[in-house]
View (cartoon, rainbow, N blue to C red):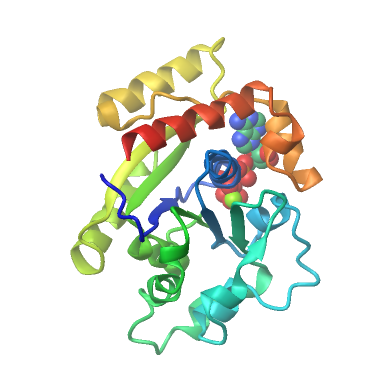
Length: 259
Ligand code: ATP
Ligand code: MG
């Protein structure tokens, strides 16, 4: 796909399974793209706010967050915050985002509020990355409706592929009703351990189902990756030489060459 000079490509990172590496991927892919001279906006769409704290933003002294954009109180421009990496900006989230679903009950356009919010800033970025919560709730539906492509992290563990059918059905439903241009960018193997049979089996099984839709890059299991968020830093500011950092650089390169 050729990127128009003025419109960001919007990448939705989703998997309703918890703890598979969505946020780790959102933060570190965004950072790796940002140091490749791309302008990146990461939007935290998860009430847990892990991408927010993982980028060193304190949730306690935030004047506004994505929730206030979704309910129409703030524009996206007003919500954008700086991070330690100049080309990487973030729209934060915190617990009150849980209220979004209830707030939207009577709104006939409830599936498209994020898309409308983001339209305000698409010309200022090359990529916009959306970090979804571990559910197929209205927030994930909004993220899929606003996106060009879906990136699915798949943890290399038993039952990894279970539930993927449900996610892909949701994607089809969104394509049919709200966003016909949405496509599957790829399946990303995370916490890959090349020494274990299980990791290899998950990789083989994923490749059997999704063929070339599985990214060539697999993100290795890396203790450094799991430590970085507690320091409020993407991996490339915490330990740029570790295997996890190199994994996300490789993924960024694969995406830059392929899009
Ligand atoms: P949730 O569904 O709760 O939003 P998630 O899918 O966003 O979770 P993460 O928060 O990215 O998943 O990762 C879950 C846990 O696994 C975290 O503690 C994270 O630090 C760790 N982790 C993620 N990727 C790796 C990796 N490649 N190597 C080691 N640990 C990892
Ligand atoms: Mg997360």
